Amino acid sequence: MNPRILQPLLLAGLPVLAALATVLPACHHGCLLDRDALLAGEVWRLWTGHLAHFSPNHLLVDLLVFALLSWALFRSGERGFGWLLFVGGAALSLSLVACDPALACYGGLSGLNALLLGRLAVRWMQAGGPQRALGLALLAATLGKFTLDTLGWGGPSVDFDSTAVVPSHLSHWLGLFWGLVLPVGAPGRRSKWRQAFCLP
Image (cartoon, rainbow, N blue to C red):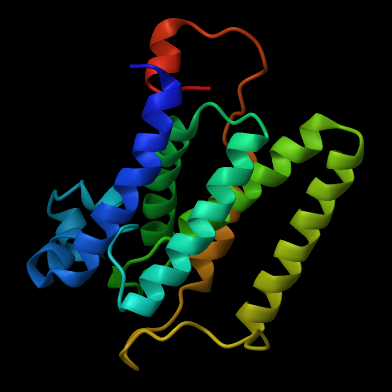
């Protein structure tokens, strides 16, 4: 399939799947990144956990940020978006479960959004010129925001509809890390199969 068609399909389909994983109770329960369920073999949760949210407000805020970052990445020349979501989503989930033993459940796109932020900063810095300075500024602002949030000095969080749900600041840091370190393909002609599967 033409990547110019596939990548918009990914963007169009993800909000629909995220809405279903948020508003349908059975779907929500089956999609959350649940530690015990994951260790029992339900490996799909490595990806679906990013789709399940804890309130409509949580979903809308995350989707808005996701759409803006995706648009900026496409403008920057990102051609491995499917690969980025697949590999980055799994790496983020695995590292979050490994690094936070107290985490029972996780849901939401915010960690993946942090990954896209890191990727965008790398893309801009690679571009050189004024975009390099923009990439450095984006990275510095992101580091500052995450530090303030971790210390409890950040702005108001989204409404989770439950006091039992708290933001996972670690997911933001891990997402940013994976966005910075995952390989970025060099510009140039790619084979048809790499284009079809949105690989860098």
